[in-house]
Image (cartoon, rainbow, N blue to C red; front, side, top):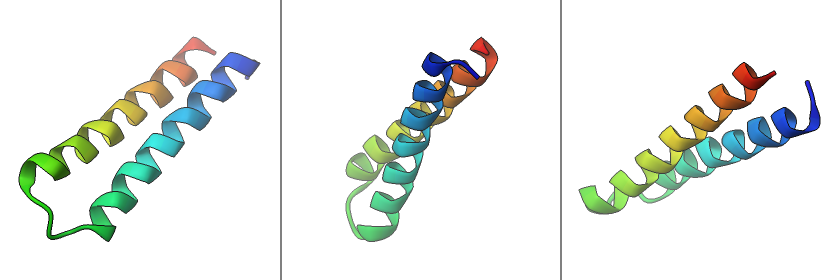
Length: 55
């Protein structure tokens, strides 16, 4: 795994963990507020896939 792939996978993991933990920490927020977190986690998964495929 080259350095760029490692950075992309790390960034993706951070976005997924941050998004999911934010949803768990603030379960009573409205749907639009939670949707941003779901989108952030989804983007993290996409970045992880790009990092792995690029390798």
